[in-house]
Image (cartoon, rainbow, N blue to C red):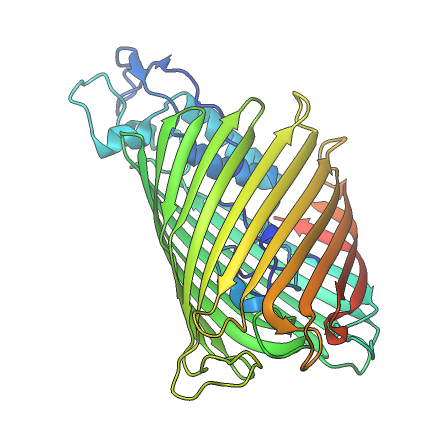
Length: 475
């Protein structure tokens, strides 16, 4: 699927979600830089500290990826919240040029954020006023996408697939404020609409996402952040992992997440972050509304050529509004409230295989355990692996292949009513994508997606093939 966001609610695979941290830009060593005064007089040369790496992280993510968001629609909706809300962001080549110029200006005056937070008294040290003429405080980007495609199973049906062609349109906009005074602001918005040509159900799908993120760079290795994320969706989702429904359903709803956090840089080769997201999930029907809260802890080890290893742990507490807990046969238990306790561990390895960073591989291994705190009807364990290979042979070109596999084991649910065999499920999905420039601000792309489930529960099984091709106009 092109241009879809994967809300981190349980019905989406974690491997499609946003990576909290991207490969780091190595912090440069302190530099000697002449600073000009307000009237053009050159001050004595001053020594400036290294570039704040967290600011580099955002620029690296915006430069290395165009502002595109990708969706994996399968997986268990309530098993994840909105933590991976923003999916894969990709920005335009125009944005790349802007941010590269911004980086050059920053390197000549590194440490602005730190000095703004804790201004030194040395008159030879740079100030925000000195750098205002050098740096644009705000940078903007926008893109529009249009594509046509074909899907052989619109509703993810087990036994009655409906095929249809479709037209998809989308817009993406983003802006970033340089942390001249120690405060960085990132604003992102994406909207996508899909219309099917045939008389199928559903006949359309919509997805809107918005993100506002504020970061404050201290002079010390600490960094604070606060983000507000929102999603509106109207599409088919497979919620059978965490609900009693055994077939994918058309759902309409929204998700709002507030995410405070801190980050600490031990050195150029080690960092950690702690977040405490609070999410609220609303649905028009079928699925009960619920809230989510819980910490997420990440440790990262950056190394040469902007590569990185990371390990994360997430705990989520999820109380439902009105749903009762379920007995071992799936029937509601009167006078109870349904809750879920979810544990996620994810190991990720991103590696550039050459100095030009044309070849990139991303490997992810994850484990998820969900417990319902009652009869165990909703309990499951999941092991997952994902592998992505990206190759950029020329400027603006990109070839990408992905494969993802997840295995579910249910502790209590059975494959057949009254049977003894426990429910098992395997999910396999893949993607092939090619992208090439045809003009300065125009690109063409083609993509193929494959999704299939295997299970000893017949209603769990379906397969979907999707092909699409289109254009991207970048502003």
